[in-house]
Structures are given as C-alpha cells and as structure tokens.
Amino acid sequence: MSTVADKLAKKSSRQGSSKQVRLRLVYIDFWSAVKLSFLAAVAIAIVTVVSFFLTYMILQATTLIARFDEFFQTFSENGARISDIVGLPQVMAFAAVVAILNLIVVTVLGAVVAGIYNLAVKVTGGLLVGFTSN
Image (cartoon, rainbow, N blue to C red):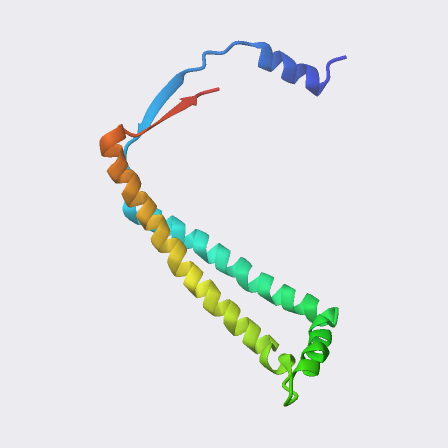
C-alpha cells in the first residue's frame, strides 16, 4: 500500500534539473528601504503601546502600584501619592511619545542603513546570493 510519505520520498529521490543561479545585490532602493523601515516601525510602535498598556494593567491588577504608594507615603512628608502621577492616561501618553520617537528613529535608521550599504557596494562589489530552482 502506498502512503503519502512514500510518494513524497519518491519525489525527493528523483534528481530533477535544478538550476542554480548566483546573483549579486548591488543596490538597495532608498525609498523602498524607507517605506519598509517605516512599516516595521509602525509594527514596533503598536507593540510598544500595547505592552505599556498590558504592563500597567498587570501592575494595577496585582496591586503593586497601591503597595508602592503605601511604601512611598512612609517616606513622604506631604502625603504625595505615586498613583496620582502614574495613572492610565499618563502611562498611555508616555507610551505614545515613546512610540512616535521610536517610529522616527527606526525609519531614519533604515534609510541610513540603505545609504551605507549602497556606499559599501562600491568598495566590496555587493552581496552574493545563491538561488536554486526545484
């Protein structure tokens, strides 16, 4: 009886005419690199905001902020509370600022890396990449 595994084994044992191609990457389009790095930065920004929110919710649910509030009030003379400073709106505003700064930095970094690679190609000749067809 023939199974799927046997059929796959027969297919892989056949030596087909696989052609190997070696290509050299000699140029990275600047605007393509900027667009791709911007897309990656948007994904990182979303992850940043969500992680700040989840971290705050976990700290709130485990009452660590309230415990730290009590600990801080023992040292404070005027009864200042940490929970007044570290609320959800403040945490989310800080997360948004961090995400926007990260968005700018990652986008610029992608553009800089593309520019540096394009300059380095003039010296090194590019990156040699091998491909094969099955």
